[in-house]
Amino acid sequence: EIQMTQSPSSVSASVGDRVTITCQASQDITNYLIWYQQKPGKAPKFLIYDASNLETGVPSRFSGSGSGTDFTLTISSLQPEDIATYYCQQYDNLPLTFGGGTKVEIK
Amino acid sequence: QVQLVESGGGVFQPGGSLRLSCAASGFIFSNYGMHWVRQAPGKGLEWVAFIRYDGSNSYYADSAKARFSISRDNSKNTVSLQIYGLRPEDTAVYYCAKDRLAAPPGLLDSWGPGTLLTVSS
Image (cartoon, rainbow over all chains, first blue to last red; front, side, top):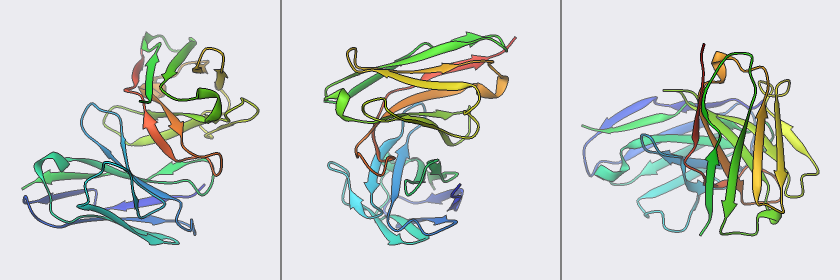
């Protein structure tokens, strides 16, 4: 089973700040990495696939990068509506595995 | 547009069984693999099971292999998750999700709102 380690577990930033979340896989997953956004009481929303491809309709302030074992989600200018928990997930192999989540809050 | 709606959750006693269902619409259901993912209260996401588009193969998390069974009915556009021998640790919101790809499976591009299962005496 591939382990996914996310950091930090929480981040507090001001509106307009740049926020960076990292995700590390326990083995090479090439670019089979997804980022989701989950707001309280809601289902996860698919943001980025194949590590860096933005899903249609997702604001361009979100971006993803990385390959192999190290990946990054960046919010270039944090907005109030971005308050949520963010998860990475690998799909290189079953079982699918998720990172532990990063809670993003407004300072 | 894609719509997934789960049902069947509620409060159940330990040791019992139940069947969760997910009704799909807005896409050609028989072309896509489907997953179940769960989230315990206040915890992260845990993948549970996957079934291929035609039902030919299914896969499970280690935690689900012994007591869970995923199935689908392409004539009714539904996917189900049968859980036997309920345990308190099965308490979670259960989501069904659609897979975008044929291979590799795991690009979950649409999710239902979830159904809450509580296992308690």
